[in-house]
Length: 143
Length: 240
Length: 117
Image 1 (cartoon, rainbow over the protein chains, first blue to last red):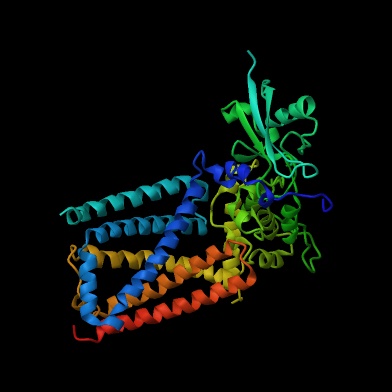
Image 2: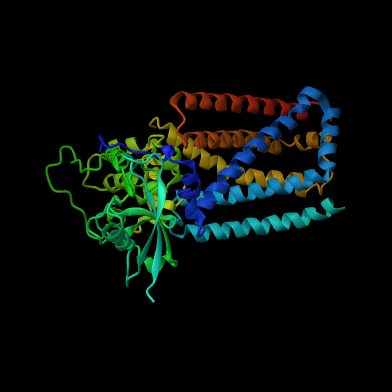
């Protein structure tokens, strides 16, 4: 095969390539494993960025002192936007942790044959907890 | 009124084309038609230059794997009726270089297969036969995984193979497990070291695409999990 | 023990994951569900941190969180065909960045503790 000229995917004309995005097409019908992986990765990156911001903000007290810290937290925690952001954060944490537990179950050899069911159960649990938290937080946002 | 299938086929001849294209063919449907019958019909009656691989036509050799209506499948084992539509789109397997039309270069796939030493390595110093009791649990595991026909569907379905061309891929890792877990083989430690490379088992994140497309119903994700377990135990000094 | 850093990193990722699920649960409950949405002040944090168990929880959160996030990011980098040098640089940046953030976080925890609030 070494003597035959080959055209790799990289060399293909872009108009055909966009029509044909191979691995992503396995999503219709919905391939649960792919969605789980993609959302896990997206929430993971988002939470890492959040962690960076969170540690930096909380540590601002070293540079700017107590009064600044109180003022900053007052402004943040008082704003409605922040409360909504908190809910978004919670959604990301819930999905990432519960799907993470699903992955750890696979790692110890449990449930690989039932990976789709585990995903739906996990998502249902995340959704239920999220709804509970939203109901709890809603009066504060709306008031 | 006979059913006519509208078949869109990826075409590209490196000798003459600079960009690929899709050709549309109309193929009369026959009873129990497989996609392999469709491409044979096109090649015999409509366009003799269509290139594709096939051999046994009964799902044993793994030659005719293609990307059919959004999923990597064996053309000989994919019934047109099961696709649920009269419109077919046939493209070559992703993640592998295209030689011509539906023909892909399987070299990268087999190079990775060879890396894990896919052959039996006898145990050093063994003078007698190795006894394998009947009904041994690990044999049942291995027997399921031995069904692999190296068709390349799993390798094409995995997006980690797409983004990291060095990743060994589901088929190679599956084969490695079959030998590592086999009591009779003596090369287990060496193979485990090879697959525990950062481009080996650790690149699997449980997408399960491989299990979805395998014509032999193997779940390489599961096999790779078994390898991860062995690797971690070895790291901790526990020998299974 | 054999020197398989990949296996060790993988295992620690799982251990920190379980740790984080538990610790974050406590962290969220303490900060959001116990306080009923009042604004938190420096003095509140200081008072909370005078219990050594809560200091321990915060320190563990810091270390576990930073390890899990850095290892996660490195894992993503390894999934792409980044060249050997790129990987080494990313690894060192993540390790050093992680340590720096851990130290900063630790110092700020101290600040809450040892200033009369």
